[in-house]
Length: 400
Image (cartoon, rainbow, N blue to C red; front, side, top):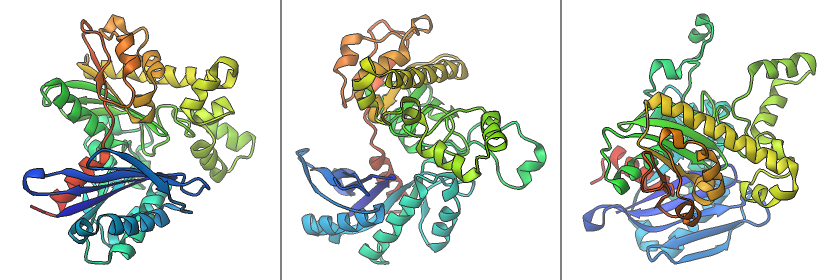
């Protein structure tokens, strides 16, 4: 039997086709990503079980259209495996208070996720588009499962998830920190334990998921104690176009003194802030690193990005009462050695020392990047959310 996984973003769609059961349980038949959705240069980069990388043009105006084309391509490319398809797993960013575990998708679940879209406007709407397109393309007999980013953080300690707000507000809506990137943080923690041989039930690890969206988590014994994102994915680290931490008084000032509407703030903080807002040039860290020597805005954006991440890293060492490891994942975390080095700079006093040569050589591959004598290990681990989504989909559907 096979399982298909869709991991949707605002302008990209990752996918994986997994063979399940038998001696090759969990093997990957095909995986890849559609980039440039909504643009003129859309393409699909993919690789099969032989790991040979290929690509083809795929133009889609929105993620649902990309999903429709991917299903058709897979049915043409892998017809036998698609005929054995027994389930489809979707990554969903915000599950709110209702979803603390994966859920089989029906219309009631879809409607609930629709209501949560305002809390994750860059992510839940594309995921819903993909769900609906997949339902049409595959028919009603293929069950679908939602696997939630927020589920990993559902049990955050009360003191870590609560905001210091008036008590009477709590009755209107659960105003709490949900945390996001939970599938990625879980993968980083579990894979670190596998690579290092550390005790997964006792290790203290800070995980950094640094990409278009950025977040950090403090995890002890596979249980998260804190995370940088909050009720929405806006809180915490500086991101590509999202602001991260900002004084609420600043936002009130913009509304009161300058007449900003809630809608205008919502758009600016999600789409025009972060690295793009600081630099005035680009939201892409690779481009900012290229511009940095001659562009003050690019240099400032990188400085703020690294300072914010280093501040959270130090805080999470305190939350964990020390750390065994720091693990980097995500597009920036996996491919930008200079950013990793700057985030860890000056932390030798707490036992973290980066090996410059090992760090420089670690590009998109698993590697230890700390020195042999470093008391706190540092690793780069490419994130594989799709494998966890496939595993959770299989478990939810009770497939052998």
